[in-house]
Length: 315
Image 1 (cartoon, rainbow, N blue to C red):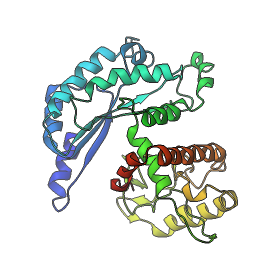
Image 2 (image 1 turned 45 degrees about the vertical axis):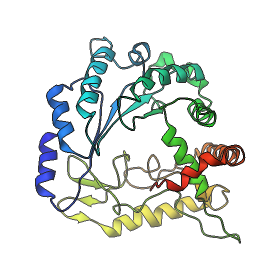
Image 3 (image 1 turned 30 degrees about the vertical axis):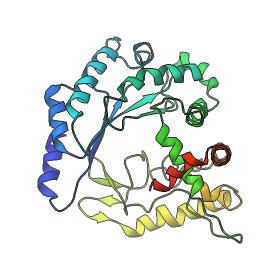
C-alpha cells in the first residue's frame, strides 16, 4: 500500500489524490498509523462491530480468540495519529449481527458515542451481513430483520437522539426525496435508476489490470484493460443498450422508477445484466415509500431541520 501511495504521488503531480481503504485494524501499529496520517486526503474505514461481546461474536482470529482487544488498542493508536490531521477521516463500519433489535442498535450506538469528541466528523455506518456470510446457527435469528436499521435511523433522527450511527445515510435518503424529479405533466422518460456512466467519474482496476466501473461491483463485464484502455463499444453494449433492453419491462410501469437507488452493483454477471436483477424491486419500492413518508413528516413537524438539505450535495 505504501508503495502504491508513493508511486501515485510521484506519478500524478497535476491532480489532488484522495486515498481510502477499509481495515480490520489487526495489523496496524504506530509506525503505520503515523505514515498514513502523513499522506493527506486519507480516508480510513475501520471494521468494528461494537462492544467486545458483539464484535467477538464473529470477528475472531484463526485460533478462535476474539479480536476486539487488539482492534480497539490499534484503533486508539489510529485515532491519536489523526487527531490533528486536516482533510482526512477515520470512520467505522459496523456489521449488525442477530438479534436485529432496537435494543442492540442502542447498545452499539452508546458504545461508539464516546468517540464523537475524539474524532472530527466521526460517524458509524451500520449494515446487515452479506447473504451467506453468517454461521448456520444464526439463520433462525435473521428472520427478525424487519428493516430495523432503517427504522432505528429514522426514529433517532426524528427524535434527535444523540447518535453517530448512519445519520449521513438518513440525509442521503431525504436528499433523494427532496430532489426528486417533479413535472407539471406526466413524462414517458424512464431513467437508468441510479446507474452511473461507467468510466466517467471513477474506475476500478483489479490486480490483473482489468478495468471495472467501481470498486463496489463484484462480477460485471470489464470496461477494458490498462494495456489497451476502455473499449467504448463494449461499454455501450453491456452497460447501456443491453441493460436498458432487459430493464425496461420492469421499470416502465414502476411508480418509483424516478427515485430508484439501484445501480449496477449486484445486478450484473461477468457477461451481462443478471436475470435476477429485478427480483427485489418491491423491497426498494417499500423503502422509497418509507422515505417519502418520513420526508413529509419532517416537512410538517420539523421544517427548520430540513433547511440543511439545501446545503448538501451528493453525487
